[in-house]
Image (cartoon, rainbow, N blue to C red; front, side, top):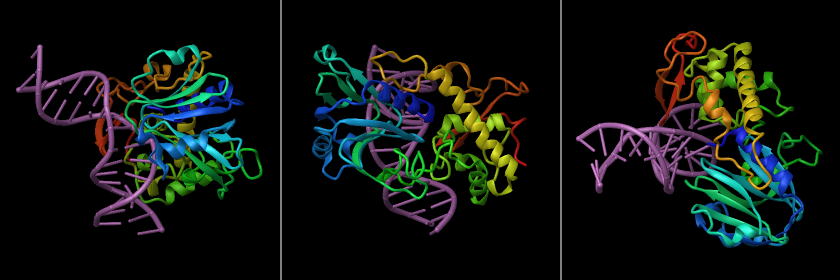
Length: 296
DNA sequence: CGCTCTACCTGTGTGC
DNA sequence: TGCACACAGGTAGAGC
């Protein structure tokens, strides 16, 4: 389940292994993968053909690869199960992955595969348009602007230009609960269900704490906890990728070793020993310690 | 406008 | 052994 740390690992892999290559041919095997394109797979393939990949940029869980055509980019969302895999020429003669959805064959014979089991992910070629905040790099930088359909995504918790006090203030003005706020990608981005539970455990906040009854320091504390959790996950998950495997599928080491709340129902809280509780939440679940995460 | 809820998808695990 | 079904989750868009 790719959240920000996993997507950043993919972005880094793309930046190191495929930038500067030119797309000779794009093959779109699944119409669903191109569902954001009005003209479907044919339009996606046409938008990629002949384009050189120039930069890999990320905000939250959205990743885009800028193209040699000015102000155009390949937008990639991995959804729940998406992967980008770099293939050598020799590997292209092997049976493709059963969940291969699209393949970008490069002019040098290598390829970039988009593999996605559950097809929540997608690819789209879009205009890069200005955004009020200037995009991931701020106004005037090489990274300015964002793909049109991702304009609404807020700065993420690892963005150096994120103003934590301002974000905490916006959170407190919402009439919702703190976990819903963390998952709202228009408030701050990059946090999914797993890291939301981890951030709240670390901050000692109940998932159903009303945001309008959260002090500014506590609101800020939740966001800082989220940034810490994702920074640590990135450090653990981002180190194990070899040359040809721009991996991803969320199986970062973080999953196995460092979760304190998510999926830990029934186990002793690492802080106080109270069993972690799991409750259903908006068609999914929240995990928290009933003793050290209380509504106040 | 702001918030909540549902549909989308498929492999895995569980219960009968 | 085999079948049925709940579950996992990010996002857009519908609904209230």
